[in-house]
Every structure is written in structure tokens, then in C-alpha cells.
Length: 414
Image 1 (cartoon, rainbow, N blue to C red):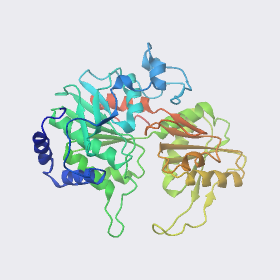
Image 2 (tube, rainbow, N blue to C red; image 1 turned 90 degrees about the vertical axis):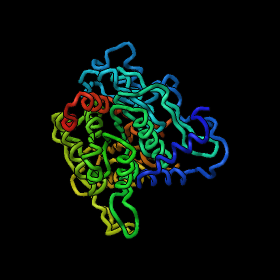
Image 3 (cartoon, rainbow, N blue to C red; image 1 turned 180 degrees about the vertical axis):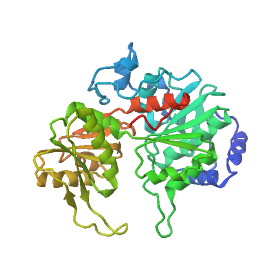
């Protein structure tokens, strides 16, 4: 038996019921598929995540085998994705050996790339479910006194439960610190109260605190207000701008030095992100990069949108539409059409988090684009036609090295 007797399991479970946020976490777990409390708790019925040695190779792994990761200077286009030609971000010394990285299923490729750059082994853990649907997990080696970094994009309720229980298990196993790497912060769009709805982004922050997380590192939040939901006295937060990595890649592959590129925000809420991308692209190319945005406001959820209006001059230019999330693909498609109607000669797209919420979205997202670039914050087995995947592992690796070395994280992408 992996987890001991059933009586021991219920004893452990009862201790988790202390604290309202933990209770909420367990209630959420019940909602995602545990339909009965009877039956076997004998073993993990299916392992979602295999040991790290069984994970497929990724581009950074292939590029770094037998080489110094910091001197990596190759723009490989391989099955798993893309990298920049130069190493822009990772330069710190490798963390000490008491630093250990673990990957939950939604972030396993990014975690493996990051571990390789840091020259650290990816820790082994088993994640799966019991016969009755309850989540089960186990660290395969002692982590007492270690700095634990858990990679998990919260793309579903199931991934949230896996993360919360992983944090709790690490804390109960006497880890020195428990650091959560949240490449994609699920529920971040539910950041305000509407009538009788929860503020789910804030509730998730409470769950992380209650389970014992010390530090949170996340990439390209939908709204920076989410940072304020975390109590700095218990869980400190660092927010990385993955758009900087994408801007560097576009500088290498698309250019901008001739003043022929305009960055487009697909709606008002993305202007700040698009401007950050524009500034980085202009710095790397030395060119005059323009900025435009699409106005499409509505007063409340469910209300019909006003007619979209492109604000800015894109005639005769190559445009890059920059967003944080591609879900249905509709926003990216609409922005590309508006830009072309206004005289743009070519349209490209970038979105940090590739959710692809519907089957049609996988083809729709890049339909009107030369190509759509996304990052590897969310694990995807395959990419749709016209969609390219960029690794942000160097950015994450540098952040982890600075967290352990107590260096500044906020200025990595300045």
C-alpha cells in the first residue's frame, strides 16, 4: 500500500479540515470527481506524471546536452518548440544542491527545461488518482531541509487540487521553503465581485496561504490586481514578464529596426502589456516601433460589445498583436482582420498562455495570422498548424536562481 492503511489516510485527511481555506480546497476536490468514500485506497490507480527520466526531451534539453547552458547560442526549431538565438536572461550561478524542482502534469515540459538550465535534477513524484477519483500524490525522496519549487499551471480544478496537496505534503515533509511556480495563474480573470459571485482569484490566494506556501512566482497575470490578494506576511509574490522573451524572439525573427513594425493591443486592458512588448522590441532592434490598440468596451458581462475600433496607424506596417491568453481565438482573429482592413501588410500574434478552450480555437487562433507565437507555460502535447511555441525557461531559471540567492527578481526583464 502506497499510503498506508485507510484509517491512516482518514487521520491525515481530518487534519486538513482545520482552517476555512483548507476546507474549501477539500470541497473543491470533492467536486472534481470523488463520487464515493468507499472502496479501495490501496494504490495509485493511474499515474498522470511519470518520473522525470520518462518525460519527453524538450528543445532546451536537446540544445544543452554536453554543453554549458549559459553559453547556449543556437536557435533550434525542434518538435517541442523554439528558443531565442541568444541567452538573454539566465546568467546567475546555479542554485545550491538543496534546491529541488518538481513538476505537476500541467507544467512538466517547462519544469524539465528549467531544471536542465539550472543543472539540477528534476525531482521525482507520483501524481494520480485512487479508484474512487480522489487525487493522490507522493514525493519519492526525502525533501527535509530543502528549498522546494513546485511547477503547476492551474488550468483546471484538478490541477489546483494537485498543487494544494503538493504544497501541503512538502510542508508536512519538513521542506525548508515551499515555492510555487505558477506559469499560468488560473482563475486570475475572476478578480472582482459581480452580484453574488466569488472573487475566485482571491480565494485561491487564501488556499495557497493556508496550505503553507512561502513564495509564489507567476508569469503574465491577466490583471496585476491579483498580486494584492496575497498577504505579504505569509506568501511573497514575484511577477515575471514573459512578453520580454517573446519580444526578443520577434526582434531576431521579424525585425523592427526599419520602423516597419507596430505592436497592437487587442483591447484596452492589454495596452500596458503591449507597450512593454513594444519597448523591449524597440530596445533590441534600435528601431522606431509603433503602438496601436483596439477599443471594444462594454459596461458589464454579457452586454453586447460596441463596434471594435482600431486606434493608431498600421498602414503599410507589419503588426504584432500581443495578448496574455489565447482561449477561443476570437480576439486574436478579430484584431488581425481589423489591422489588415486598415492597411497592415502582415499580421503576427503573441499570447503567453495557450489555453485553446474549444476544438475550433486551435485552428481559429492563427487563421488570419502569418503565425501565432505562444509560450510553454501550459503543457500541450501538440501545437495546431500555424502556432509556434517559445520556451520561457531561461527567464524562470534566472528567477529561481535569484530567489534562492536572495537577489532581485523584479529587474530581470527591465
